Image (cartoon, rainbow, N blue to C red):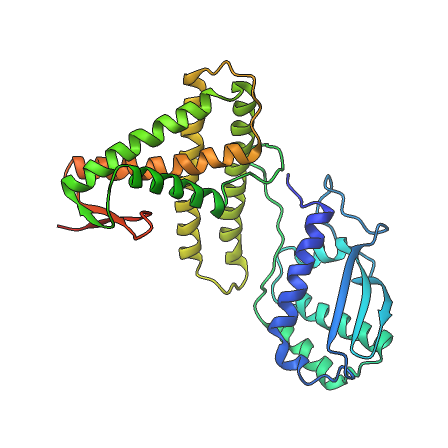
Length: 337
């Protein structure tokens, strides 16, 4: 059974509180903050009230969501306050909620706390308006699900924008050396550019793999691909679970985007794994994480080139390659015939 850790629950509380306040900003705008323009809230876990990951979600009998509220410092225009959160209570209240009453209560507890320590006026009228918002559809929920597989809970390493830009720059240098000019190239002309590009990049990737320690690379790829699969499963599961509450995004579009991105990066990881196994490097050189992420970004471009070459070669579609004035391959396009 998978129950979020206390740290994850605290992060969820921050998301929940920010969303709750944002959804009720029309009510908050009528509240006078006595000239204070900025209130910084430091949320922390009350160690007297911790969630046991081995226990079921049960009713919490401690009544206060904020177990302790204190003023850190204050001047005429800003204030810093500290709030200790009763996480078991939050978990119980968000366990398959029927409405938005918990988020309404978060706003009420927050404004009551500000009223006490900063002497901000919190009228009964505002309080009643916040109570009434509790009948809205829930926007946050926690549920307990059976884990379908076990894996390390680590954030996967995936290439960043800088890695893809560097890969494209490498391609641009090859295009420049080959004497290719700016423009749109279609059909055979496009193939004459794409195929040498793919050959060049494949050899570059294989040379890099041969130059680094095989065991280290295998461990990195397996651990991170495992984590990436787990993260994809969690993200898709969260989208499905969001059917229990209101969201401000299109679920279908988000699920499709997640699937597309997963398929793309999954192919990159699998290619790297297969090459690492088949090339059987004897090198002792240990690569940095950045080195491996650059490899994955290079592989991403290689697969794009392979796919384009296959489509053009087999006359599946009419397409080509765009080369900009910096000799960057800006896009590979296809037009339905």
